[in-house]
Amino acid sequence: MIGDINLAMENLQSGIDRAEKCPFRPRYHFLPTAYWMNDPNGPIFYEGEYHLFYQHNPYKDNFKQNEWWEMCWGHAKSSDLVHWKHLPLAIIPSHENGEDGCWSGACVINNGIPLLSIQALAKISLHIIMQNCGWQLVEME
Image (cartoon, rainbow, N blue to C red; front, side, top):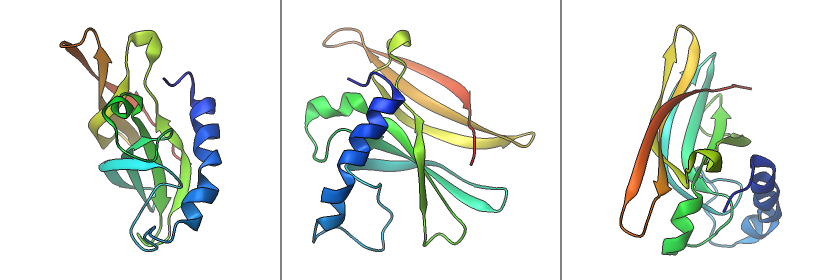
């Protein structure tokens, strides 16, 4: 499980070299720097740049059921939708609040401030899942 954002970012950094050497990695389609991503969430145009948030597992590069519980939100920005600058992870699960993954959501601009709304899941038992939805302020680079 994810302990903190620094651990997630370090692990993600360690997979970049392998990802860049993969002969099957698309060169034009948006991808995270390494590892697995799911669907994009909360794309916005803010202060002259496009921002893309996406479900991302910074620990795993293939899909297995137990890897779903490490889902974070990646973040990238672009001025032209072709060339992307990868930014630090935008959201990681809050284990203090019992969250095990960050899922679908949206981003809106409210009075000039970007706000993310996410669905975070917590495993209560094998068959019960609690859903927390909330808004989080986003720091934009």
